[in-house]
Image 1 (cartoon, rainbow, N blue to C red):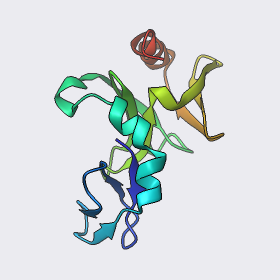
Image 2 (cartoon, rainbow, N blue to C red):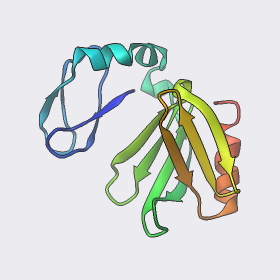
Image 3 (cartoon, rainbow, N blue to C red):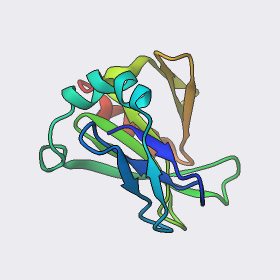
Length: 141
C-alpha cells in the first residue's frame, strides 16, 4: 500500500483508495489524502493483494547510515519494507511493481532504482544477510 507522511509527527501513514481521511497510528492526527495522490497510486493499489495474502517471507537485520542505526528489511510477496528496529517506523515501502532495477552492490548492499527516479539502498552488515535477502527477492522482482 502507498504511504504518505503525517503532517503532525512525520510517521508513515498507509492509505487505500477508499479512505480520503486517515488517522495516524502514532499520534492520532487525522490526515486528508489528496485525490491526486490516490490517483497517482491507483494502479499500485489495485495490483496489491490483500494483506493476508502478502505474508512475510523473511525479516533480515540491516543498518542505516551507521552500523549503530539498526533496521529490519521485511520481505513480503509483493512489497518490502525497511523498518527502524528501535521505533518500528516504516522508513521505506518498496512495491516491487515500482522497481525499475535491483542492483546487488559489493556483496553488502542492494540498491533499488525506482520507476520515479528514487534510489533506496538496503545495507547488510554480514554477507550471509545479503545473500539471504538476494535469495528471498529472487523471482519477486
